[in-house]
Length: 276
Image 1 (tube, rainbow, N blue to C red):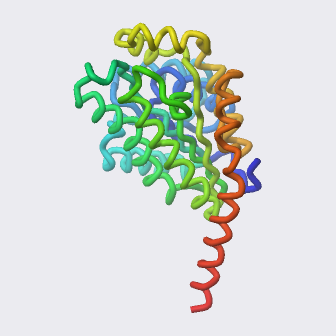
Image 2: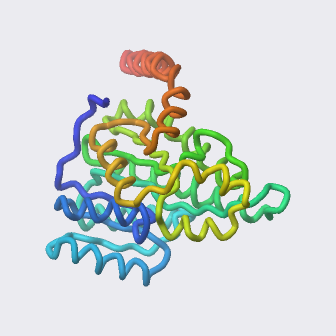
Image 3: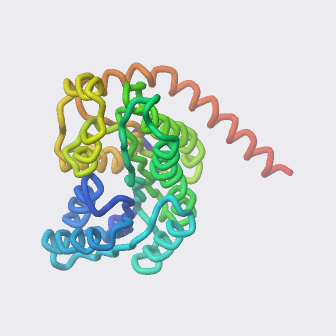
């Protein structure tokens, strides 16, 4: 659990991919709690529908909808700037936008690999770069990856690498940003009942369906609640379900020692700099 400061409850949240699925479910919970929220997505019609839904949760909600493609760094910077101009420094930034188009490696075009890396990894990277200088003290940065970031799964040769890369980024920023008072959370959700899962199932190979069906399908609201609770407490890695939790725990055994060693080096170097 993090000992970092907690951001003010009035500090806004920004969610990419906030017009549907897990992103919208998180936005509903944030709005219900009275926190301002900015939702970012490409489709303006879906954004408008999401705003209507959020207003139904709380009529006095402070909501900003920004149409942007997270694959474009400038667009993400503008979304963050618009949010802070309207609501003030960020309390919570959630990189949730993602796409999945499963298929067997030998059959998938290279364009599928490019597109999923562009959205899933670079989209999250763009948000992190824009959000870090815009955080209020005690800010929280959340990356929504996938259970596919824990273990390679057949049919996900384009998707899993983008989420493994996101996990790597989160592991590094967990250490670096702690020195700035920013906590990082990496969410690794299982299959979740969202429009994205429905689209994913269209191209999912039969072997992939067979392998993944044992994990069940979770509701977007349950997954959203898990992610937000972890972010609030400063927990780094979180998932749902027994199987993924077991895999996650096994993979993180060596982490504490490595992180302690790196933080010690960072602080020693900072002290050297202060003496120069």
